[in-house]
Length: 392
Image (cartoon, rainbow, N blue to C red; front, side):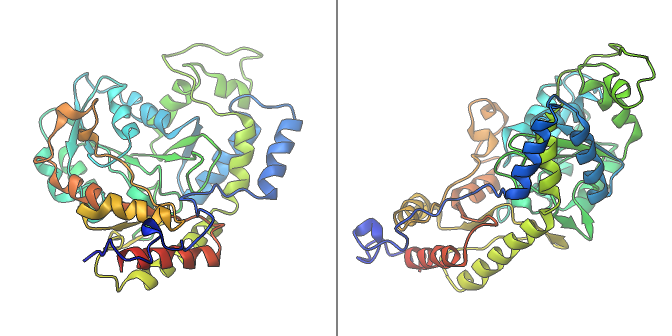
């Protein structure tokens, strides 16, 4: 039972664990990153899809073990491209987990497709595999599983169901760069995968994303579509057309600045170290908090290795916001995360709390704790001390 009236609590006037707020997130940038950006700027090659961008794509393809990588200006545009490349009939349906950021659903919606929300595992927020098959209709053309918190979705049964019903799988790996599922890195488990390099992600280019695939046909379409429907990629690489390029299809501008390609290269060099540091912090939290009866710790997919993009605890729903405020009073910035899609104005017609109960159960208890590579040992101890003080 949570005791809200302990006089030692900062929220009750007691002395806080930390006099300086420990934030939920800090972007990790070092001198190598600053140097990479400076050199790219001094080269004066700063526009989209420059040499640093192409080198980043090459290195990322080697890291992931995929044939094709397209560096984009966001994961949202990568998701848009993933569906644009397939040209499904309008009003076809795509299955999307109810607990995700809006971008997962925007990918199909921007391409005149409909979204059907699927409930999630109440302990980790990933799509509930047992609810996928019953959600499939004659209009269903695709599934878009999400790796919430960097923890891979249970991809084997998802892919098996997709094969059974001839469905396209777009794996929203926005949060899971470097994570593994049964020995394979995310990005290699579906027809298409989409990463985010937003400022909050484990590997960041400030803004940015990537579409990755082993499908040559999809890759051929994306080459044109991401560059305003032109064959500019060929012009940049081999210049066979002697100084001009053609407009060959419909498209949009999804390419990223060469400056940020350079940042991606320097970040990629240390992604395994950054993820390993996150794992050390997560393991410390788990060891120090596992005996607390009032919280539940993250559930990792069987056979998976998470990159610990997010560390969360599940608390009693009736005390969630009080716990959040109490932790903040102690100097530890705790936060909620996504509101289930059906709880948002734009998606509320797609389901109710009663129809999607596990999404509400997960959301109702979810609190995020600070985790990032530059978190110090002292700060880690203060986070644990604050959680134990408030929830113990």
